[in-house]
Length: 141
Image (cartoon, rainbow, N blue to C red; front, side, top):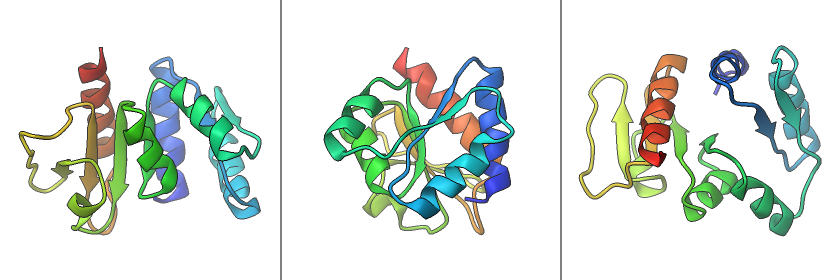
């Protein structure tokens, strides 16, 4: 997802009262996390953590917005409110079952309402991801 999208989403999350925690698993990911955090009032780049500590830390979060990664799958396993961002239309194979498409929204009635995937080409908009976040966090209350 483009850096500017992450920053814009972070600003919306901060304005809604959320602080961001930005994990990473490599030097390159840490650089991106720091770029995301730079313009945000409430964002912390986590130190690199082992999977056990990362799982504990993630479990204490209000929810997760991520891409198709191990962290996103951990969020689903922890039953956290979760929005997974996709730029390919086979997200149903690997992500949460509720699939929101910015051009034509469809839902699976067997899906977990607190977890969803957002798909669009070339990439989902900040607004689509924000609305999905509002939906999954509303369901989590």
